[in-house]
Length: 299
Ligand SMILES: Nc1nc(=O)c2c([nH]1)NC[C@@H]1CN(c3ccc(C(=O)N[C@@H](CCC(=O)O)C(=O)O)cc3)C=[N+]21
Image 1 (spheres, rainbow, N blue to C red):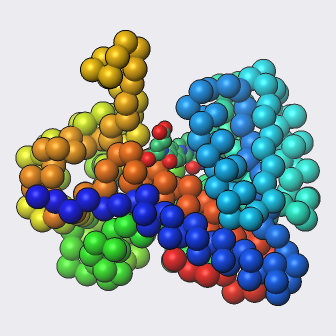
Image 2: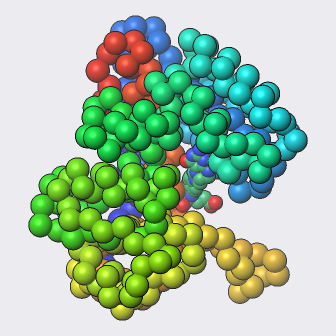
């Protein structure tokens, strides 16, 4: 039976350390870390995530702003808001909740964020730093950063000799995760929708990261005995057993079946989701520390 990797617990530890770090920064320099979360439209899932980000930011003692813009907001208005936030010395981190409405060019919006405030790590500057190994000054995207911390807890910081398979090639999770695993000396393969015999490939993985967004796509017999399984998927599926119209969250991995083979596995909920928010707090503290010329704590 696999060990459950308790992401929520690790996330709580990180949030407590960030809170302590923010108090220290304030005591030494008077600087209070500030984060602005921008959301366009009223997607209910996005609203839930944004609310929990703002709640955690307050818990950490940050200055926290939430900008809620109407669905029909035009790109120029959003770009002007970001320009204001870029110029605002009280704001150290800017997060624009994705996805954006189709009439807005998300790429242009992301690239307009000051790279030093890009706590999502999506700006070309931060992507380039991560892929060239400049990780001391890069912002690493929050989901892969949190996934890596849980991987390290299970396998140590040096993954030499281990095989890692990342399913999913997104700029937000798959590609940065592959870079982090590579930087830790794992032998990395990125799989995606065009990969042939995904099951056989997954069976070679000492570390398997699933980031595809398909509920329970990864089957129990795809898991190598003893493997570390990191389930990044957060899929809401109908749960008629809980009552009419109810739903529940499942990952990209068939958790119960995977537990038979895995050495350790992250649950959904309670795994990577809370780690993502914790790393957003850690990145915001790091942004404020850099701005103040003080060393940032690392996790
Ligand atoms: N610019 C941007 N940055 C993001 O980091 C970003 C984004 N856009 N858009 C949406 C996704 C999604 N995301 C989640 C974060 C935490 C949980 C989380 O804490 N989930 C809980 C469950 C929450 C629930 O019950 O719904 C868990 O897994 O235990 C989920 C999803 C961040 N995202």
